[in-house]
Image 1 (spheres, helix red, strand yellow):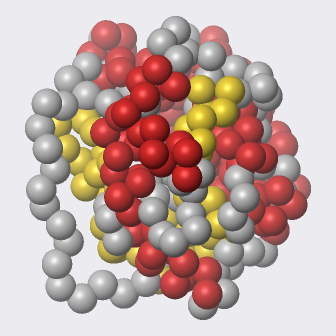
Image 2 (cartoon, rainbow, N blue to C red):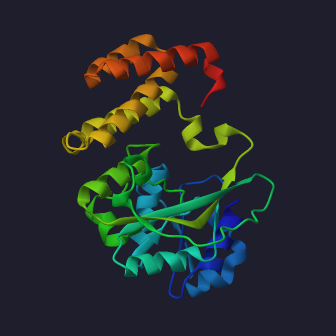
Length: 283
């Protein structure tokens, strides 16, 4: 899948752009998989670097940004494909004064090739005009950011194995940087046959709850002034607690939040639903 991902990125690469592949100490070296790109490697259009910032996707991405020569960074997962016109569109958005953004995706199944493209008029929307939920951009959704802005907020938190993109979005929102969402197609996202192939789905609910608790704690001052954001994250935290099917942990979490009656009801309703469904029937 890495070979196809890199091929799509190189095909979309703007003039003077570069594709950086971060090898996170993989069993099969990325350089071996990408031997067919000798010309691109010689010309500097493609670079393969070994992650030296600690294992995991957050650290790998931070290392990639530290290696970047350009002023705009656009993320792409190693199993997804880049839409050929998207990088050029990103450059247009930054020229209009936006510091970061993300866009629409098109899902496709393992073993197939994506063919559909968005048609018709599309209108970009400043993130400030959207609900909080829609202001949170996934790093696999054509997420791009000015490198100086990324560095000014400390990059991606390597302590978070999942939901690190939520943390990044929170810090960008807190910084006041202007973001934009586009319904324009950015990335073809691969739907794997097994849900466990996705890092988020394969992460235990207890660990995901822990990460949401970290987000709520670290951003508590800002969240105290952002009711919609605070309530959204609290519900996500409680939902992860209910998926553990650990009633004691759920009660402890609700007490830690100082939850109101509606959140207690939400928590116990979800707990009962997941208890009935069984632990193996959800992700």
